[in-house]
Image (cartoon, rainbow, N blue to C red; front, side):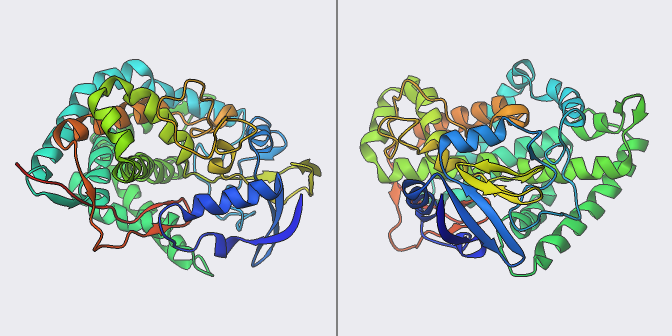
Length: 390
């Protein structure tokens, strides 16, 4: 273990693209675990694939009841992320039919339609901010339609999302205020869906029961808050990093343009190398993480990018190899909390990246616009691209 303190707030400061990942690399190369500091105490940051996977696979020792290193006793509960088995398992069973491969297959024509409409809008411009004009619009439209949320409210959703996940401040007041506003918003929608159900996930959720008891409005609100955060951020961030990589690595881009059948394998490599999720877990007993002692009640931080770039787990781990054949990455987590939306995410990434490169195969960064990378759940704030219009 390393005795050098890691300051949580400093680790989450805005940077240039890739610098958050580089920080994780530096820590992992020094030790498999590190002592971290928040304003209120210590946590442990796990760095190696072995340590991070072990924490994910042991929910009895590493509870999901708290998921942020600086908030070991949260005043909120995101369902089902912040539930432990067996209750977590029961929620997963309710959600599974909506994200199963067969359900995703039925969504494929609509996914193609949405990205086609977006590309019709941007292709003839010759430039765009990929994050705002494509990455946020595309998967978020699919998510909002699946949940049954108004597309016209997408702008406000993104403001709330940024406050909750990406603006790290000393007090957390902005995040709590945004969560309160989101809960108020969903309270109205839940009441409306109970009276006038539709063919959407939110309407279905109002009918769910667990152990013979109807799911309460409080639990439905906690569920909606989690779905809101997960649905509006994850695929957009992965699309942005993948496209940033291809804009800055023209040889990789040309290989994919010449051989689109390589995209599924390349996407797994982008998921490995640019894994932006960094969840936390709460120790339920005194134990060790990566050889570092941790006390019951302390938090452990699990930056997945650090695991995915571990040279002990992957040959040539510090480089993107777009035709990598063996790729047991942790981008979607592991254990009982492995991302239930993985099938949908992969389909959106495949269709989104394939169609963009079919329509706009040759593009470049706009050097006049600096690119910013935010902390929290890491991602690009913007991605200015230019291309020649024929």
